[in-house]
Amino acid sequence: MGKTFGQLAYIRHIITFSLSPFEQRAFPNFFSNGFPNLVRRFRGQIFRIGPPFALLYIAFDWTTKTHQALLRKNPADYINDE
Amino acid sequence: MTKIFRKSNPLNKMINSSLIDLPSPSNISYLWNFGSLTGLCLALQIISGLLLTMHFSPSINLAFDSTVHIVRDVYGGWFIRNVHISGASLFFTCMFIHIGRGIYYGSFKNLKTWYSGVILFILSMLTAFLGYVLPWGQMSFWAATVITNLLSAVPMMGGTLVETVWGGYSVGDPTLKRFLVLHFLMPFSMIAVSLIHLVFLHETGSNNPMGINPNMDKIPFHPYLSFKDILGFSFLLTFLITFSLLLPYLTTDPDNFSPANSMVTPPHIKPEWYFLFAYSILRAIPNKLAGIIALVMSLSVLLLMPILIRSNKRSMTFMPLMQVTFWLMVCNFIFLSWLGAMPLEPPFILMSQISSFIYFFIFFVMFPLISRNEDKILEFHAMYS
Image (cartoon, rainbow over all chains, first blue to last red; front, top):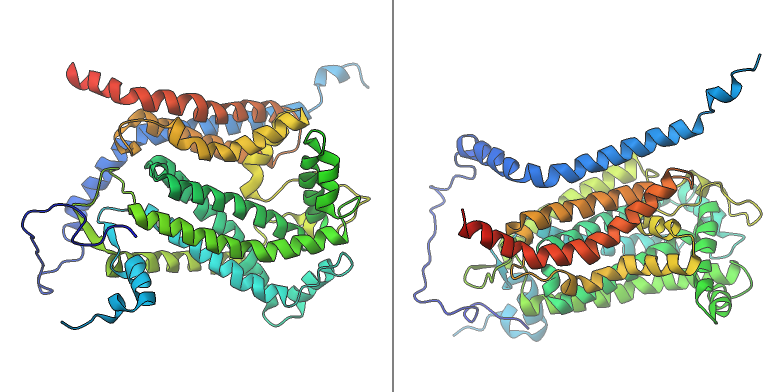
């Protein structure tokens, strides 16, 4: 069932590398590199994800307001009422 | 050479090759957690469901009261029921995200895995519908009436079909009993299909966000992804417990706190939130049979994904226009779901019709056109820029 390690791909030379536990840093440069990267990724996606959600909001808003407007009576019908 | 027990014993070998030494792509994101999370939800639903069955009486005279009895008298019964209710919502949340991820990253190109997944999705929808009828509240009864009546639109044999499903001339005691039996049985068939889903998945290996062959750079499932899955489990259980303890009836209908009454139709019959998109499509079309065909199409369109999206790139990661279309589909899905919960009044009717049209337009026109031509546009752009 499926391929196992050793038969996945033809790889010349096996390179293994490891880091000493004394050298490991779980969150290296979290703020100095991570935050600008977050901004970069956000800017890369916002114009692809934003417009559909903006449309969704406009459609939702228009539908709700139109429904409320349709539930109201037409004031012109009661203009001659006492 | 020493024999490694996890690799020599036939049973352990299976567990080893699917949970320990499984070569997995090194770049899969947290979106790849949702398959295992859906599996966890299924397990939790089966366990909580089993405990609920022990105190439930499947008779139209006792079902509602026995549900109240579970919540009020059975030790911890309220919690088990709340877990079962919130678990169903989380199950579908995970499944929708799982399917969305499959569409976005082109996972449907693993045909056998995708088709078994679609079968699982349909089975879970059926199971959830059957389970919703069991407490025999107003909404349970009317949901059963509305949905089973859909079968009456089948030409020639509609009436016979409906009566066969009912076990009588209306939704009644035999309907409730057979629904319990099927609701109990189907999750086990879902386990079997899940295993098939996994076998097919492990045959090809997981897809990855880049949509390229990841065989050059793979990592063992354990410890990397096993621990990542456990982290996902802890988040899901946190959500489940939060919803079960604080907002257990968040997604349920208040009408279901009244016992079923065939003489009183609730003013707004609507299903649980995860069926609303399909319900909205069903309601949008005035003709009964056409509505049902659209409803079936709204689900079975997933089966056509490998034909509809055909590009030489697997993932949408490098296809900006496809990404916009995908998010448009997501927003339209949310809008349809919201419309499904609204009363049948203007402008909701018109908006449901427009939204249903957009749903199929995205799947049948936008996805095929854009996926086939976007790479050409990008190539053209690259050539002349």
